[in-house]
Image (cartoon, rainbow, N blue to C red):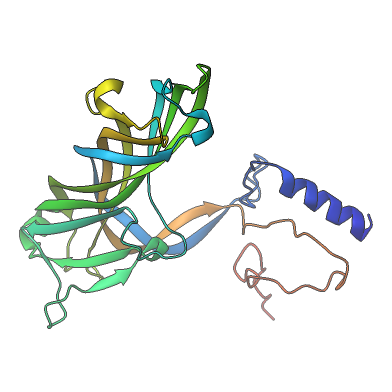
Length: 306
């Protein structure tokens, strides 16, 4: 296949509106290629998941304006078809104060965060750079029973920043015709939700590592008119086309908390992930590997004794 044909195929793939991922892992169902591997990873010793919820009322959220050319004394909004709310995020500035952030503030009982002598918690990096906090308590009593030590915690979760809102409306224009459009606005969120939890902690003595506490959350938002009345909740200026709305936003949060410890695990493997490379014939077949070859059995036979 020529280089031009290769480029055409890649262009066709880029033009597709959506995609299907490829992990590079394949398994033909045969166990003859399955081998045992030892991997060094963080094991979850205990975890809990919580669903939290709250309400935020926002008044006179600006939604821009309808086209002035279609407005007039007879124009009015007659129906709200749908309201969608999503957390705001500026990819050009992760520290933008308008970004929606979820900040947990956790206090432990029955254990403590390990400090560095300056009063700062000691952390280790986790998946995707997530901070994991070292924790400690005397686990002697439960170690003797061969069980974990229960610890408790209370938490305040601060949700702040903005949500982007889209509102699909049906309106009558100045000529009396029915029109449809999507209005867009932004509403501030500032809520503090409380939570209590219990976790089971492994031994701090029978391990080379201290346990690690980590947590993460995600938020979903549901919007609706504050009183479910267009007359009361929608402010519309037929002269300028400007629209504002009174809304209630439901805050739906899922949080997960884990206690983890580094361990070595034996797993069954079919080998390394291997993607089919996209080849453009410049270097031929001379390309470097990304990972070293396997040097253990059964990939390498032991040397024969002489």
